[in-house]
Length: 297
Picture 1 (cartoon, rainbow, N blue to C red):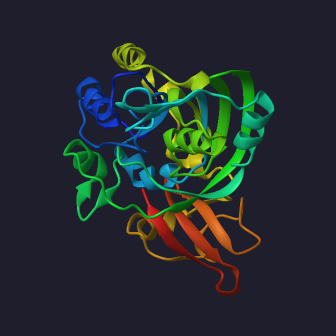
Picture 2 (picture 1 turned 30 degrees about the vertical axis):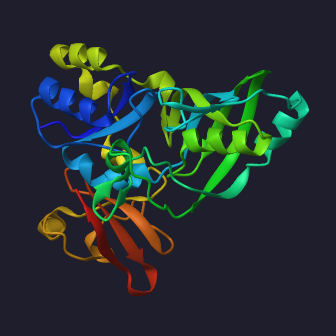
């Protein structure tokens, strides 16, 4: 079984589930999980976890994300992007300055109401399933963080921009909300996810490329190791005579690990076996000179 994270370039037309299904066929293993949905019409970075790395799917889903988007003003749709049914069209009468100021006003924290066409669940049913049945339910606004909006070009009614934001942010909804603020409505015309945490679009691999690399036996060279996600944590190695304690996920004490990389303060550490293989994330408690397990791999 292969263990690690692949930086997949999700192409248009694929759902995140489609990507996982295709990878299961290519790699011949079932233990695969993606790190958050990306709309079928969107493309770009989709980190996929293999084997033991599926334990960090939630961690990756929590990372900040960066998108390159095109906002189309003057058009409102039921999906908040151009793939949906057009509900309204209006003339764009706002000036470039007014549009610019409206976009920049969304920087920082704002309460965003998730779209009906989304994978969020209400009473056990996905919102997009209800939407397809013609139903609309009340959704609670969620606070999201827009760290930065960089505008590349404004040629009305289109705006090209890059958005860096927190997890759970819907760029479709951001485009819709900007349109409402401008006063003419708006929707998302194009979306490319360029970064998820440490994973950048420049290093991403398309599914066909992954298949070739796997056939050549070179895929592992293009994957991120699990411990690379915790590179900021000190690295600690258990002594050989206490290896079984680590294997069983037991607590460890300072005398049971090597001195190299020993932490000087409380906090998480990368725990390696005596053979040098990464096995877990532990928390060090300085006062008790003790390590307790946080997540085993």
